[in-house]
Length: 342
Image 1 (cartoon, rainbow, N blue to C red):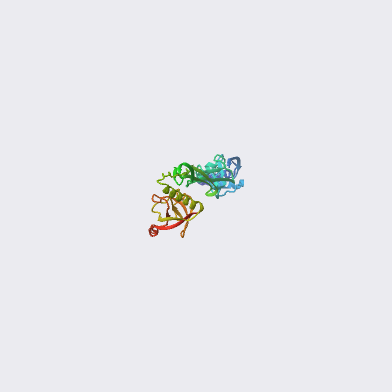
Image 2 (image 1 turned 120 degrees about the horizontal axis):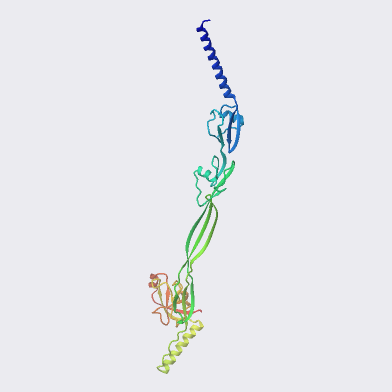
């Protein structure tokens, strides 16, 4: 064998040995035990493995990856000595948000961070349970309720009352207003509580904001006594006495008396001398002949209440209230007979 042939043979053998050595070294490197750290859900595990990739290691350790699993590196990453693999599992939280429930996977550490992830900021009317600083745990429930109190105010008037008082400062049949009446006011305040938009209670409170003022009318009780006329002669005195006695006899006995009757209507006024409403069934009288408040019968026309007076109603004259001005005109002046019933 020539020197040249020997040299070629030596080179070939060197290449083969090199290849064999490299392959063995690579295989040994791939199959030897590797020491590393696995941090799973904050638990530290020191691991010795022959696995070549992160995915193989997780299979070897029995970790089943899901959509809740988060790795700090790809599953096909090659394992090397002293590397640190972090495996985090998202917590499942059931969220009840203002009456709507849903299940959410989260990496948040606290309830506050969890709600921030959902884009929710608690307001002054929101109640969060558990509180925002509570650590998140797997399969926990977070509830957010909104409690709102609404207030509605309604106002209404309180009609004043009318009071009649007797006074001897006025003659019978005379009245005057001693105090003007004023309506009062009251409020109805309704408070409604709503839980997540649904009404759960309502309470109404009544408050008097202004007391009504009583309307006071004073009615005279003083009896009017006509001055006695001096007698011109014994005959005239006798005639006057007989006339007065006859009229008193009629009044006391309820006998019929002759009167002149006219009529008036609402255009004259809507309140009588006694302070009562002017209305059909009322007549104006001379109180010295027919006392105010008396019930009288007008022959052929009916029974009336003597509640009003008039400037032209003197002596045996009465004025009958009718419902319209035309009726009063048509009535004209008539002679009637009247008697006092009580």
